[in-house]
Image (cartoon, rainbow, N blue to C red; front, side, top):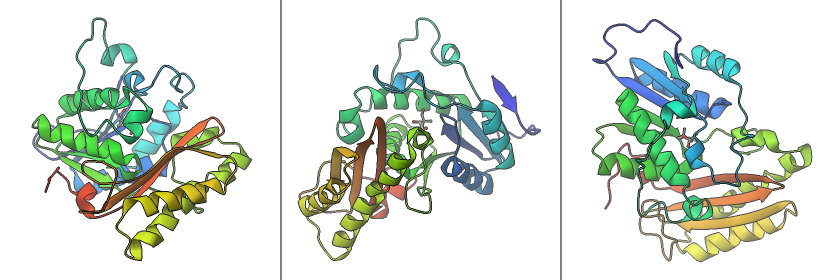
Length: 284
Ligand code: PAF
């Protein structure tokens, strides 16, 4: 389904188009992307699609939260002009058989923990780029590896678009906003603040001049261990372009983690050096 929220003038193809891809159940993080797009682009499109190909067989595809009427209202208020809300069968018709694989930066972190995840992400984002032909596409820093993968794909497949990375929006106690936070019980919600605390402990160590990866990872592990409900899946201090675990930092650091709180899997990150914020991938 294609929902036209505002009259789109006939110059759609001649002025800047901004695209905000989402899986819906929108929160302030998504809306900050829409507002940024609105402030920079003549036309703003969004997509709401819970993309089945990026979920593993034991993941939460069936119960992923959905609320289309609310999402459409919020997107309209944020100034979005057009929303694509396709059915899975429209994006992946019978006999669909072409996928996009980004080879290297998908191997570690989320890619290692969720086999096939980035193949699904890259494929659906490639399709959305082809459908909308955006000049600028907006993604949140919270999915830092996703941003690295999409920039790599855009460069490798010659999309002349800017990938704009917007800061993670946090609750007042530091928890990164995520559609999955809805799964947390009140006790788990309280425990979930440990992710941001652990990142900040490592941040302080980085800011004191430490450039070796292991002390940063160790500090995050130790902080996570203070919360009995937290079960870390991985803790990483990686190079922000290759995503290889750091020996010694050459061009900044991406601190990241995936932690289970009860059945809910949460991710978060902080980074230094703006390579992640550059609009196109530049490898030095
Ligand atoms: O970040 C997300 O919500 C999804 O991975 C995306 C980019 C919309 C692709 O399905």
